[in-house]
Image 1 (cartoon, rainbow, N blue to C red):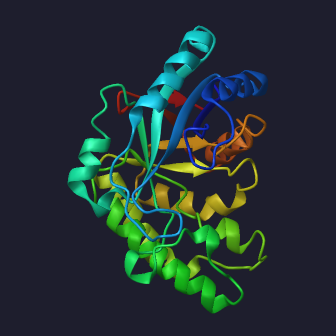
Image 2: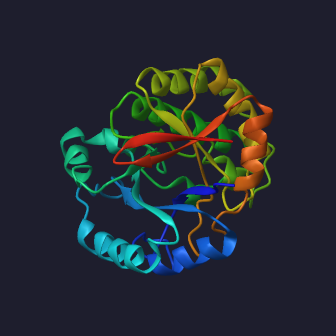
Length: 268
């Protein structure tokens, strides 16, 4: 089986823990055949107090070359980026994505809008349902704006805030009220020839993706990547086999892998 993990992080991400070469070792141990490192570039800082509209590719590329030299004959390796809120500054986004060796871009939203303080959703309180739905209102408005931009290949973890609401806070929050909004976001991606990812969040998130994938199929979406969102070697590849099984059950025939910003379709 071709096992593709298209969403992983190294120490080149602020929340990463190990160099890329150790992530490759984790991939080998997990039986992953195709590994993409997608370190973070977010246009808003974690606390939302500032914009960061540049990205230093030099340390990222240096680690990637080292990993490729060590494991390129045993793994299919690609260089990616998880790009947070690139729609906020088109000129800066174009500059960040100009690296010729860049293979893959996940477009993500991690932060509230600047008018609401800009904090990462990780830091927000979810004490009440009202807290949750205010955050989700804000999140999906940003995701809609991102989906209309050209600064991604696939939309990243569309259900992102749920991992904190249903995780530490154990809030049974449904996305049902956002069905039309999510459908619109997915339609924007499909019409632009872009896709979405199934993010297993280290194998913790699977069933939550089923209704999103059903909407994506209704929208005639076909481009799907799968990633573990591993920030250390242990969870690389976690949940990906189960995600493949769910995709097959829903009628999808392929997963995608990217090289030079172009998808290759791998039969499930």
